Length: 181
Image: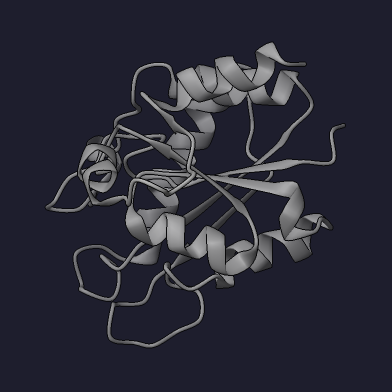
């Protein structure tokens, strides 16, 4: 087992994102290659976690049991491929709730580090948004950006001197990462 933990944002990294929110298990559609990428991480000895803002709960678009059904679908699809997640952490709060878990604050990443017994410096956070990058930096975690989801819009907002690795999608990042092993 490797000491590093790969943390993934959910919407826009593992599954397709929507400006109207992913509100049902039927709307939860994996991005091509993302589930296989998680299996590849598992096979390479990485632990894999998910840190996801789910303000649709606070906004009343869906409840926690529906979120659990979405995660059950994700876990079932992963299990069918012989893959798994070590932890899923989510923030159910809205943008004005001022919680410590909602990205761009680092709470979820710090919780994952504590639960999995690693230092934040032993983690990578793969995301598609500015808030993912900010959360990673605040937690002392290495950020990685993918162009799926909100990734292209995020890429356009980065400063030229931002030293953030950018990949087309999770599958490309994982292929590159596991090539070095």
